[in-house]
Amino acid sequence: MKILGLDVSSSKIGIALLNNDDIVISEVLKFKSSQSLEERAEQFERRMREIEELHVIYDVFVEQPAMMFKGGKTTAQTMAKLQRFNGMCSYIVYKVFDTTPVLVNPRSARSKLNIKIPRGQKPKKIIIEWVENKYKEQFEYSITRHGNPQPGTDDRADAIVVALGGTRLDNMS
Image (cartoon, rainbow, N blue to C red; front, side):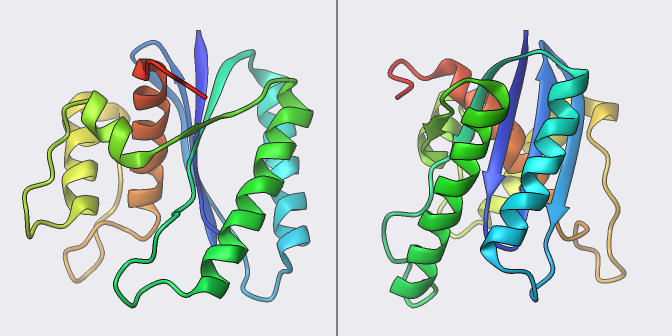
């Protein structure tokens, strides 16, 4: 039973394809800043079609876009852009896989998987460590010269958490 998890942002998309307890695909699709949202959606659709040709997907889970402002980090314009792009990607999933993707709240997914983020801790680091512990040799990544996970590692880990958490949600719509 293969499931697809997507962590969608307008600059990159974390993609995870899981088959039971195995990671089949764990990657990040990066976009150029010069690309329009439509060009980014087109690139995403090409990748989804490549995956669809090789795999039978049972369910697709997409991280729900942010719905609230995060203390000065997110502007209304940024949120609108993310909502718009998330909608484009959700439609592409519907078109390519002939299934409506399930939007997954990232906090709910973490809760269902018992991933606890202690106050003051960086969620990205904890999520990467959780995925690394769960999948041992299957989830590999490089460390930068500053000792941090390679950019995009958090998106890959988030996609896995969205996929796994999505399968455990009671109300998946």
